Image 1 (spheres, rainbow, N blue to C red):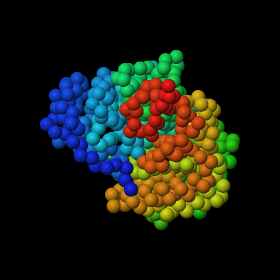
Image 2 (tube, rainbow, N blue to C red; image 1 turned 90 degrees about the horizontal axis):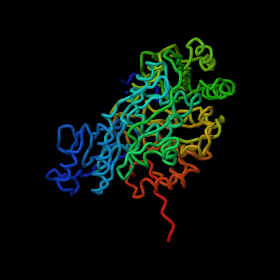
Image 3 (cartoon, helix red, strand yellow; image 1 turned 45 degrees about the horizontal axis):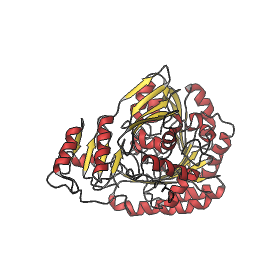
Image 4 (tube, helix red, strand yellow; image 1 turned 135 degrees about the vertical axis):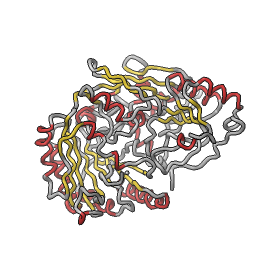
Length: 492
């Protein structure tokens, strides 16, 4: 989480040649590319065309890759055509939903990008309390449609985030302790698999695939739509966001820990350590000073929320308390300005079994050393509904960890990339000494640890995931992700 600032706001990619000659791509005959383009109801974007540069631009400005082709899909048939074309022509497809994945998996060099960003349809069944949303939707798209009925499904905390990447690798937000993760609320999904077939995965239908996409990432196909369970939330809520001096970090974070032992599961706090932004909401003398903050949302009656969340606002003498009643839609977009398009981002994570004084001191020290004033260390208090789902019920692992530590480097200038990446990596190495293992694969850095990081992220579900991968994508067509190698068949 960033710091609600006034910024209204080693690398992860390499520039390939994006080879396209005479209308072809990577040596593929021009006639084949033209036939593919004609099959799409959307359009095929090629290097040199006016919108190619915008088509290859992601939210994370660190990522700079040049795909051979970008297929802007408008429906399931377009996606199936794109998968067929990629498979038949030896192109490795990347899949773009909202384009907010910090690792940049939505873009590839020299391959085909299957772009779902124009697939943003949302259908709410208020009576059944379900919503079906296409794979290019953002959180804001879904929230606006469901809040019209006083309903919501657990998603993230920044409205511009895509639902696809978020859900496929878990999905943590304000409602995680009350209603679980995004993937826990998935009822069904439509998936185009590596053979180009469109399948529905859910209870009683392709249950192995349904199990795998709830935490196993984009390994198994292109999810063209998600059906979620809805819950009564809002439209009015109470949002707590209070900033304290960093020298009160032990007092504040331990107070949150004690608070959760008695607090209702509606509350899922986030602890934030960073530097006070130079914004008019804060006293000028505090600008740039280290802080420890607490954010939490109460999804019910705002008056009850004010009472329930009061202890989080009284942990110490605050620098500034920004808490108050608001709408759920406003709460979901409260942090949007802290993550502008085109800035540079590099995030990693560590699960930890406790928050001792030594760890809290280390967090405060590391946060104060961040090269960018917009970077933070975040403490996600977990448990509740997300921990009651069995470790093997879905592919999402590490549910029993009571805390997730997020390490966020957020900066503007390319020249500062090396320093910010080094800060995250050094902090990650340091904090792992407090961890019993486990990471969150929506905060994976650039997956540079390879197999080790994947095994920590997928936990004891690795083998079963590899078996499902072998069943639905034996050739590993979908490998621009936290990639699981298909389990090789036993020797005959």
